[in-house]
Image (tube, rainbow, N blue to C red; front, side):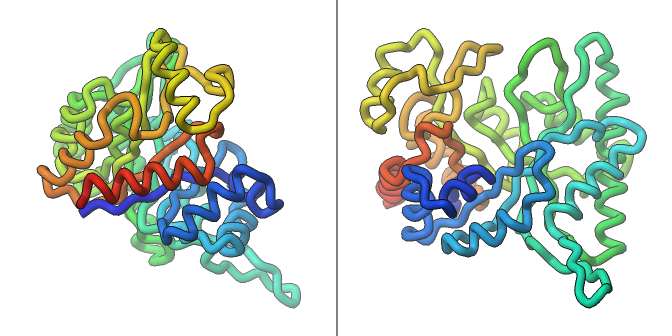
Length: 308
């Protein structure tokens, strides 16, 4: 049985704490319905996490999972240093008390999700990079286990390819290749996956390859040329114009639309999770223009309806 959650950004929390609408309404509706949230952490914004946690608490939001910035060096020799730093900064804070420094828990997420690093297409020794990524995850897990401070699992999320880069996780075949490498190294235990069905070209093939995802990210997509459908979506959700929306130019699609519109079908996704007995968080990711109370209401009601 999946449970519905919403992704919120650090900017969402800051604006909500200031009382800015419609962002405050978006967060208040999530809290009113008792839905957990996933905190999306921006690049170079790790130092603000303590304030983010305080703001979430002031808004009665329950931060259950965290989406960290993409790894920059996870496929390099010393990638575990970067990963461990990310994890420590997201879960621990250093407080000064009477001249002493004490490390205290800041967050205890059930799951931490991040994207594996990208690299130039002309430097794509993929097997070497897969091996380094698995070794990075293994070194990080062993370090965390030894410290006994922050044990939540770390999941890799597939990405939407952008620009002239290569990626280690975009397709079902990539999942298989990573597992083959991990098996060869004797470290299958370090692999966990978050399936972003909106970014996947063949979402249900990806879901089948993963088998038991740690989390599922969901959002609707529409091709850039579908101007009539996009205008209808904007009208339904109170967005003044499609010009307010960002497009994924590399694939010519709008992503992070409400999951009740576009593809993959919301009903089909929920049915697919039920058919496969998948029990994990279902996290809705939205473009800023759709982060309103009305959108939360529509999505939560639709989720309840398809589960009834």
